[in-house]
Image (cartoon, rainbow over all chains, first blue to last red; front, side, top):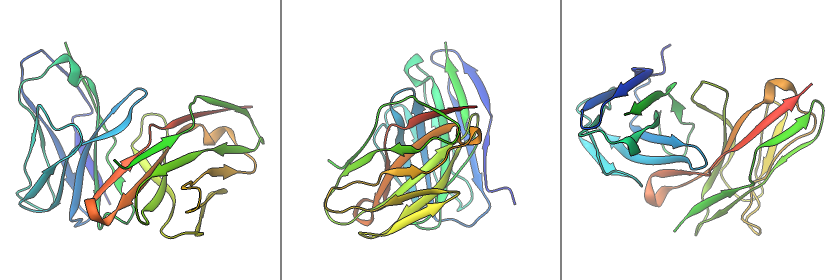
Length: 112
Length: 112
C-alpha cells in the first residue's frame, strides 16, 4: 500500500530553471494539496484540487502551476525557479477535507 | 482571516515529564480540529482530531479537548518518551473553504 508518493526526494536547481515535482496517490482520494514548509512558518498551502479537472490557489501560489488530469496524479510545476522557492514541499491527499490527510515524504528543493 | 496559533518552541523535556502544547484558533463557526506529528525526515501524520465542541481526541497517550468557549485545542501527554521527539502541528478545517490551515508547528525534544 504505497499511499502518497513524491518524487524526487532531493533536487538542486539553478535560478531560472523549471521543473516538475511529482505526486501520486493510490487511495482514490478526491482532495489533493501541495504545501511548502519553511522554518518558523509551518506549512503554507500552494495549490489544491477537489477532484480531477479542478484546481484552485492556496495561500502562496505565485511561481507555481498545477494540473489534475487524473484522480491519482497532482504534479507541481515551478515555472522559473527562484532562491525564495528553496523549501521542503509536501503533497497530501484526503478522501474528504474533514478526514485524515495523508502526506508524502517530501521533496527538499534548493535553488541556487 | 482564520488562523492557528501555537506555543513557541522548541520544547525540551525529560523522559516521563508531562507535556502540554497550547493551540488556539481564530475562526467563525465550528471548524474541525486536528493535531499532526512530523517525525524527523518524514511527512506529517494525523495524531488525533475532534469535530465538535467538547469532543476529546486521543491516540498513543496524547489527548486534546475541543474547547469552543476558549477556541483552544491543547495537546497533552502524561508521560513523554524519547520516541515522542518530533514537530507537532495544530490545524483546523472548515467546510466553507475546503482547506486545512496549519499552525507553525512546535518542536519537541525529549531527553533520557
